[in-house]
Image: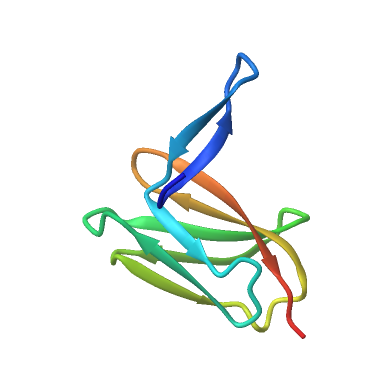
Length: 98
């Protein structure tokens, strides 16, 4: 799989490669997370949810790179939801502060 590619479970039970217009790293993270977008002509809404569904942060990004500082977040599993006008993507993020 290349940059921005994920595996997606299809309705028929097979796995297929799906494209995402961004790359998130590092994951797990302890200080900051960088999100690179391949299309800076689109605005993205980035929402981070805790495992219990509470919103930890919200931001609108209109550039090809965004940094999220996560050192103040408690350790755990979070979900990054990235939405454009066309589609919404969700990725898991693990925070491991020491």
